[in-house]
Image 1: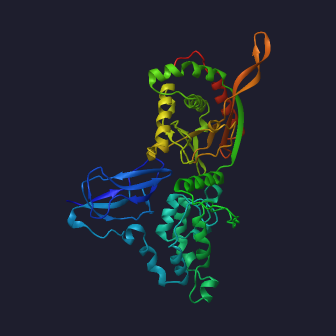
Image 2 (image 1 turned 180 degrees about the vertical axis):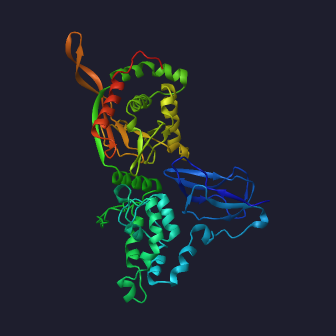
Image 3 (image 1 turned 30 degrees about the vertical axis):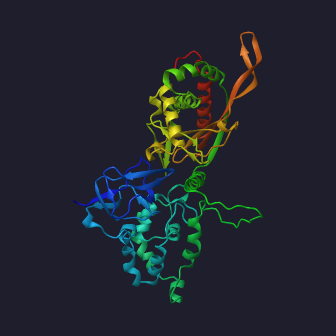
Length: 453
């Protein structure tokens, strides 16, 4: 049979790469069509890559732990006579030949070649965020993290963009070929900067923060972060580093919602075979408010604003492991309350049972997190990049409140909750951020207690 390449599949519009976590088949193993060959991990979700053909696994192109771009071949499937060694070839993992040729030309080129062996992370040694595309170009061209730091970035917070690195490359040889005092006076130069600073930065999930020794005390226990916790840590630090966070708060009277849910939950369960929670009601109000204030439903690409047509609501979900994941309800504005309820329950159940696909957590344009489920009255959530806003809903509590009646003001027991709206002050000012959370509260407070579900 003809040899077939097994490629890294597309896993959602915003997923560009995945990490190979485990090979399920070895070289020489027989594979059926649609049988899982390898396990991969991408931004919080583990999944399997099925074979697109029947045959024999004759070659692995990547090792466990390697990061692979979407669309890139990861294995070759053929007939039994085609079986070769399972160790990936150097060409499949990296491109050293593109850097090795000029080594003998100048001493400075030797420094660059040594630095090119460095594995770039999401942050440069100085803490600048490096996009997957910039890292990919840099690795192909043999550009180290320290050299990337020398490039003047035009992106947000001085980030190096694709255009910056492409503009730098034509002049790079001229800059590299210029002898430096170190290169002239040292016969066999070593790259102390790369050797002593790059490695520790790679190991840190908060690379732009100066590492300090943490003193240990008797009885302390050291635990390694799992993969998901490392990803969460990197994502949260990157978000705070990217977006100037501002949070606005509103207290909402949700008595009508509590009373309505108590009235219909049994009949809803009987008719739809679903439990109705407060979450779909909150999402419904957020969707209505986004339609009123569409400039909250945006993303920032350097100095450009991307106004989203789709309204895709992420819902932060706590996992049994204690980690957090954010599955996304796509086109939430096209669902009624029953549809939202079913989508919420389905995603929450699959999240807790590790059944989400990469597409389930991609494409979000706004996020809701329910800190009230842990008994908290409010929170200051961190924006889920590349979104520009997120809302936290607090615990619903019975409180005495002054209400207006036909006979005048009176004190009554009401169901109250806080809404916390965190937003990116680069593009969302206090007026827009404040009006948005106020509008969500208005929709919740004016909920029709007589509505049908």
